[in-house]
Length: 274
Image (cartoon, rainbow, N blue to C red; front, side, top):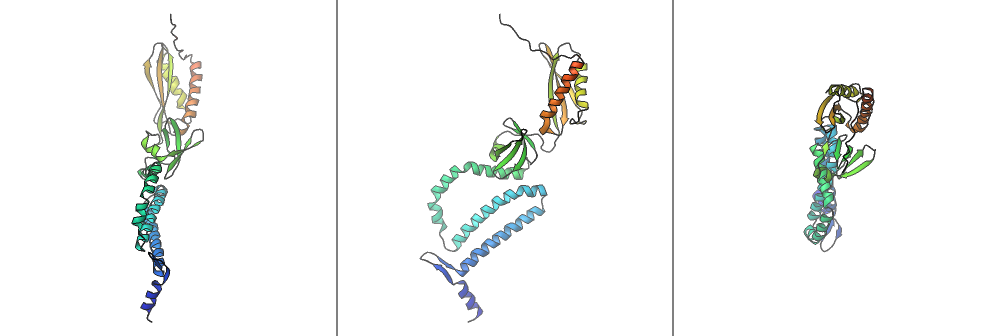
């Protein structure tokens, strides 16, 4: 008996047989080899993409690769089943109603997954960005394939489905540049020295440790009311997540310096009905 005959007998040795299926040693080797080759190709592809991208992008693509792995392995399993003689067409046909039902039940999850892939690849949203959505200001803590973790100023985590970040209007305050322009509106009585008001407002932020020197703060005279003049103090910061604390400290300083300079805040005019 030559080597060729021995190999043929080895590969054709039946481990399990029935009317519709026959599993041989060669079948097992084929299944194992196909899975190993698939794993090797996916790993090689992942390494090739990782070498050509930055560390940040590699971390972003990790979730996408996990999703691709599941999809490729699912196709590979169907290929193996078809190759060893299992009729997957009948299986898919009989399971069509189940798949349709699952599709309707899981459509939001699929939308989240697709939105997650879009966010990870599009780079319009990054970990550490400060955003405003649905009236809430939050910092992006982590981006996953199905959801994004947001941290509010109250140190509470919000688990936001990724589809919400795609469908809703989202303000990204720090995308591409952490510096933003913040504002404080201040009203004074008509007749108050406007130059004095401007000087006092600028003095309240010129030495503030959290306000940037460049760009410089500015004061605009916004409008004249019935009994008041409204000013807008614009200042620039690179800590947008802490702007509520920064703006509060500036308002304390404005109140103190207004009192020192006899600048009074207007009282709303109450109209009496006759």
